[in-house]
Length: 104
Image (tube, rainbow, N blue to C red; front, top):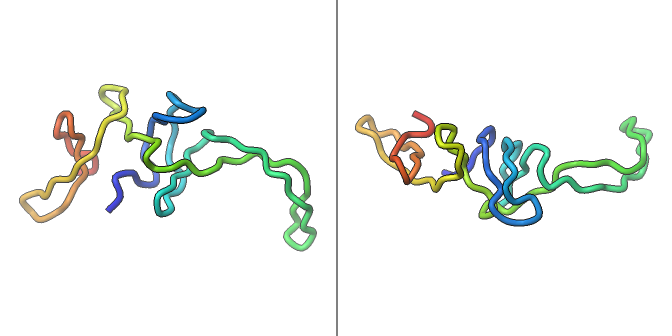
């Protein structure tokens, strides 16, 4: 179970995009792709079979998962995440600072 999941709002805590906030689009192993963060230019060759034009395409590059922190909507700050097992046996993510459940 990952601490960061698709759809989460995160804060970038390291690198050239430090301080920016965005939504996670994809999670793959130890990397995350965040919407409109870490934009790179990719020079692509035209592919007529896929009806794809060539040129310079801007897209999001993956960030290491350690460089982002889950954003607490109440405080507006990035916070650490832990786990708690509820009475009914479900395992939920919680903010370490307040103990508040993230996905109850």
